[in-house]
Structures are given as C-alpha cells and as structure tokens.
Amino acid sequence: MTYTNSVITGTGSYIPTVVVKNSDFVNHTFFEKDHTAIDRPGEEVVSKFKDITGIAERRWVDENLTNSKIAAIAAREAIEDSGIDPETLDYIIMAHNFGDVIKDTIQTDLLPCLASRVKQKLGIKNPACVAYDILFGCPGWVQGIIQADSFIKSGLAKKCLVIGSETLSRVVDKYDRDTMIFSDGAGAAILEAREEDHKRGILSSSTVTHAIDEAYYLYLGKSNAPESDPSIRYIKMHGRKIYEYSITQVPPAIKAALDKTDIPVEDVKKILLHQANEKMDEAIIKRFYRQYGLRQEVADVMPMNIYELGNSSVATVPTLYDMVMKGKMENHKIHEGDIIIFASVGAGMHINAVVYRQ
Image (cartoon, rainbow, N blue to C red; front, side, top):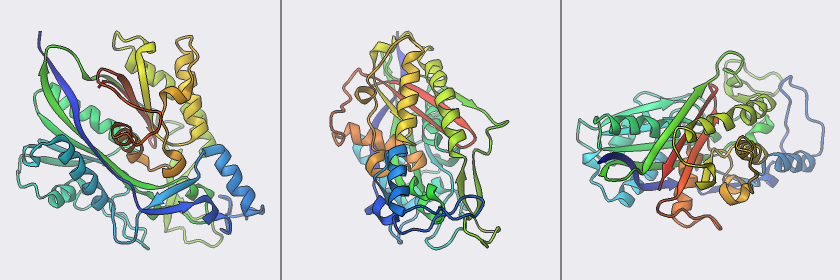
C-alpha cells in the first residue's frame, strides 16, 4: 500500500540580534489597566515576572527590519535546507497577526499580504505559487501546517512553504508589564509530498475555537498610561483568564489529535508547545499526561527557548523546531521515526495540535 505523506524537509529561522534583558525594565514606569501606577520597586516587579513566566530576556528586531523581511530570511533558510527549487512551490502560507509595522509607528500594514511580499523577496516568478496570509493568533503556524497537509493529501499541492513571523515589539505598550513577555522572530518549514509504503510526517491534527466568553482574552486596547490617546491601541491581554483557559482546554485538544492515531502516549518523544509562559506550559504538559493516568518529567519531553527568546507568537513553535533539528537545544534531539507533537494556543481563542512522525 502507498501513502501520500506530508513531510517537513527543511526548516529555517531568524532570531533577532537585539537582546533586551529583564534588567532593562527595572527603571520602567508601569501602570495597571485602570491607569494607576504600579508602586513597587522595579527589581521586585521584574523578579516576580521572571518567576511567573521564566523569561530572562527577549529578542527584538532592529529598526531596519520588518515582519516580512525577517520572514523572508527564515523562508530562504528553509528552502536552502530542503534543497528544493523555490519555483516549484505550490503555496506560501504566512502566519502573523500585525502585518508589517514600521518602527515608531503603530499602524498595521497588510496591503499587499505579507506572503506576497515574501514571495517577491524570494524572487519567485511562478504565478502558480499561491501566497496568502493566516491571521489565527499564536497558533497560526501550526494551522498553516494543517492547511498545507490538507492541500498535499487532497492532491492540490506537492510543496508548501509555511512561515510564522511576528514583530510584537512594534505593538507593545511600554507602560504595560506585559511588554516584557513579547518578542520578535521568524520560523519557516518546507512541507513536501512523499509517496511511501509507510506512514510518516503529519499523522493527525485537531483544532478548536472558543469564542463566546474567550474571544477577547487578547485584544487591542489603549495604553495603560494616564491621559493616553484612546485612538492609539496596543496588544493587551487578560493574563489570568488565558492561563486558566489554556491549562484547562489545551490538554484535551492535544489528546484529541493523538487519539486519532494508534500511537500510545508513551511513544511521544517531544512536545513542541507554543512558548507563552513557563509555568503555564509545564502545567499543560502535566495535565496532558494525567489524562492517560501518567506522570511525566516535563523537561524530558518539552524543550523550551522562552528563557532567552520570549514569546514571539506564531514564531515560537517553528523556531523551536528549527533549533532542535539543528542541534541548538541542549539535551533535546529528534531522531528519524520519533513521534513529536506541535501544539499552540492563542488569540481567538484558538488551540491546535499536530502529531508528526519524523
């Protein structure tokens, strides 16, 4: 029997060069959403932030870069890693949330779509290479992989480039403590069709959206600073609600994907989870295994780069995968035949997961 497999044949990423440490925020003036000042020593604010999120530093792009530029860098690296001719790509799927935002502005630029900009930057002339964007919150790259797999399995595509890229440093409110969470980065992967006598690559997936009470857990809102201009809006979130939602809803969504296969949970080697918050991610993994009546040492299955890279939204999962595949994550390797899971949660609120055999 022959199977049409969707296989990742190349990866790439762009890690910005500007390092912003927690100590850089010690002298910041932060306000609550009700515009009252946070009247605590900066060292205490930063220390508590580190304890909760695990983030010690983050990466922001320099003033000459935009989202589409760093996406193209990651995409070019993935193309080179796969060895394909970029003119043979059927789709370029670009996940982001804010388009290109020029430094010192707050205006989102989505015309033309970023995928078209990336296609131009890559110099791809083939008009049959279709380029489009996904606005799906932090799970955008994983959703792009799910869509690309559907194109391949249905015979509509042979090769797809899926990118997750964001420059959140351009849309943060410097008077909001949540500024310390967000970062910039880009990750990309080439997904190719392979006709083979055994199943590998993408084996299953699941996606859910909760949008009654949860739709605006992440949103755009005015600055926390008193007398701020309400017409100028920044990324905002209800952190506690997101945490409670995620630890409750993400584990069953991951389980739904795995249960579509005949693979026992004990065979899962790695779970590459959206890098949102260290404690939240650890709780998600523990609860995932608890559904099977198991206890699992989180550090063994879940690599994390949030400590140095922060939360770069759609870029966290592909960046993490690229780093593991290229030997840049100490104590974490992925071998041929390994079962891994990609999973993410974010604005919408959306959750998705993909089960993948390397």
